[in-house]
Length: 150
Image (tube, rainbow, N blue to C red; front, side, top):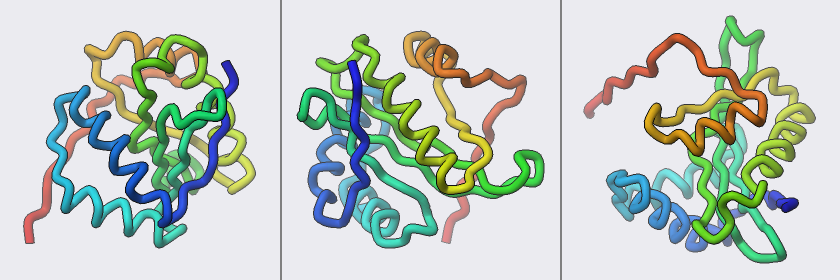
């Protein structure tokens, strides 16, 4: 099934927050409405941070995808990080994620982005397979995080 990505704007804040809450509940992630609203509002307000797209399928909202802008010598300059990609349960397994990834790749190409990266849980076999079929390659590296407290 074909998807359509529509660039989100500030007016879409509540819609995306609702989708985020669904996603975080399914993935057992900590959803803090205050920080989610603040972070999403910043992202939607400053194009230099990245892009948020609402994913449509059959003229209905089926999910969202967030890419953030990054820079790396290894990746020859600008690259995008898929920070979040969420499809509602009813839209999974229908080729929508793959279609959205293809469209996102074209958007990135037009914006001078040389690579797209993402993180996926090793235990999320279905999502891993979607990404592998879309041309992503697993690397022999681990993503590491250290929170910087104020």
